[in-house]
Image (tube, rainbow, N blue to C red):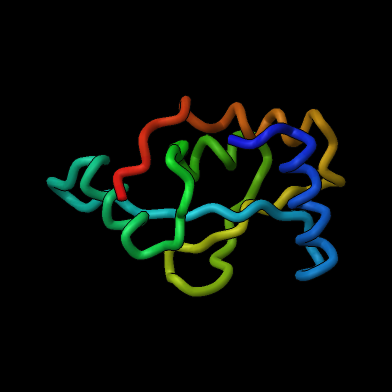
Length: 107
């Protein structure tokens, strides 16, 4: 995940573009019998995720850190994580901490 300053700037840019402090993520829901790797492969196939690595979290972990998720735009898996405050280093650190360590992008 990018450094804290870059993520803070992305949240600031979102305020200018969309009126809220937010960070863009892509989401998917595990279906019965589906593995995490299978779900991740489907999400990155649908979404334009060019990075060589991705990080995984859950809606519950993000909510526990005080964030909320809102579906944003196409594709259907595109969501914004809404920051309830000006993107301080502490808020961005909480956002980063809600994710697992980086893993290879399965695309």
